[in-house]
Image 1 (cartoon, rainbow, N blue to C red):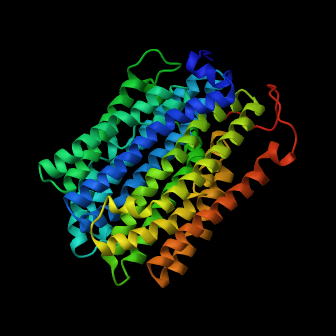
Image 2: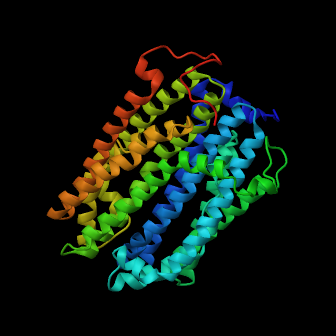
Image 3: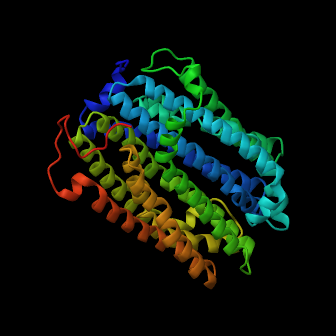
Length: 464
């Protein structure tokens, strides 16, 4: 077994947890935060440069992007958990095989998505709620997004797994800078409309994929290298990646399903276009607000995984507690700020008085849920980093099927206000359920015993 660690990797088990977590979460929050900025600017260019109908159509295609993201996130989280824990144990060969298998499985899934999606595009878009004028815009946007599926990830989670936080940040910052540059050029300058928005997105993704290929297959100063043999599917490894990453896929699939449910519910109301446009704007704002929550979860994972591999339980528990506190404090402040500033925020995107009024009402109600929205993904990410996916299944699929979708379907019958209320209530109840799962199933915390930092701790699962 090869035993080699770079300084960046070893620091995951040596630096003070608070300082380490601050550095990691700052990097990941910057990374995903710039994507949140892109989500807002992209919405602004489409809304102002093409129109609100186009904005509604782009949001109808959002489930396709969410589905692709769910696949890449699931494989990335699963592989990152294996990589960080095995690097902690000094086993670089297993880490390399996990990373290589993540790439080959994703490429296979992406090509399959492109072929299947383009073959059945028309019925797929109708299933997503595209009707009348929105169908043409949705078709133009979806064709390009599906064609670029193979470059839709840079696997930044695998980069973070070995402690390379700065490069993981660049995997987000550089492509988003490219996307923000391309949007006005393609949408406004070349008058490509929603096609320009899609080309800007795929262009940025291509840059991210190219940077990732250089990092994993060309750079020399790393704890492991992906060899040709590591790209050969290894069934036990694939099962492990899918098993650990499945809760992330289910969470992503759940987000996709929830968007479809909301879109189809809103498409049946009297002022469907206004309601759909309001949801499109609010969902982009929610994406931006959620970025620091995602950054905290992503920053925590390699720290928890690496220290779990070394059996340093006290450091694992410290990282979990600090991350949860940070998420709750940020979420509460963000929710209050959005509720107070709902009117000027939405006014930046739209002039139409009907859509603006609907957007303000929606954002103020949805902001209530923002206060708790970061808790379920954080708790799920914590268990995945430990290599324990079962609690994550309860959080990702359980809260979706038993809480969020039923609330939207039940309350959405009363109109858009009911839909917004269902989404907000779903976030609050899901957070409560996630905290209950954490209390009951996180063994050291449930026992109330003092966590130790010895290498002989039985509470953490063995390295797979």
